[in-house]
Length: 445
Image 1: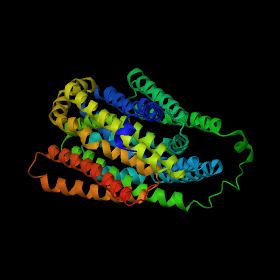
Image 2: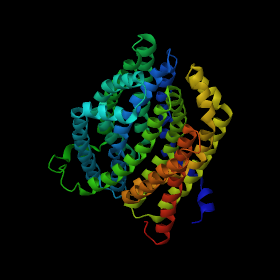
Image 3: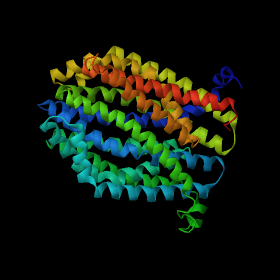
Image 4: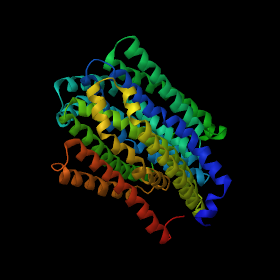
């Protein structure tokens, strides 16, 4: 079936949107939470409050996102079992990933002091920024058990093509977080610690809801028939191998993003705060595009499990079409309303002017980035972690090499943004290129 024929099929567009739209609506609340954090802290008296939250949240995000393989691998393997009609296999993946999540959370809690000390040493920044980063981290780290289990449970729901349940999970979680954020920071005046505490409470509330949603999604006979013996850790080698590859991929991604924050901190409080504001723009776009990536994960995973090559092709074409239109829309919004959005997020003049200076980088970012998000979903659904890992390793090397080459010829933060846009461009070219090469060799379906 040709690309034109696929795009003319209304049913394919409807199915893509049935999978993607719930996740787009719920995903937008994730950066919206970041925007609320930025807005409530950004209207305090000094830039170092916002800088501290930016650094503290960056450390937490780094830790949780490098463990994001828990969701990705769970989604891919559950989707393949779903496509193959193996209900017990889906539950076994959930059990194995859940055990792994609890073990990793315990490790984070045990090592929280050295992790914080090492991170602050690497990031640098003023003493005020470091102080408030530590305040944020020391509260937020206690959400680790809930946050990591939530990744697994979310992955299970997405793998079973149940985006509505995943949508309600994220909407409720982030809605509670935003409400508590406003109450604790604006209402009670708890500042940085209040913003972190709101996230902790929301994560544990989300865990209770996620467990209820997963239990409700299980077939009756499976609830009665599944035993701990059937749900043992035996046969978890594929999950571990996929987790390893996605871990390396995510670690490289987070190192690049953390480097932007760390270098910004070395350039001054106004720069690190401005970069925090602009990164929220990119996250808003990323989470919207991830809706189509999640649809690709579910469809490619199901099609891979069912050995349906046409289904894989259909998922890639439709996901690519809607991802491109969404990216163009974000570029137009950032170009037309970017400075107004910045003004809504912070009242600090130095942060506003600094963010406006670097806004053009964010305007072009969506058009450079949309294919990398889509093909991450394609490769997660197919459980092909090695290709994702290799693509990210090459892109990360390109990021640091480009920054090194231009750091003296461009003003500091422009060099960072050029390197970051180069990084996302390499990602957007390498994985689709690998897909086309392997597709023509008959390695899909």
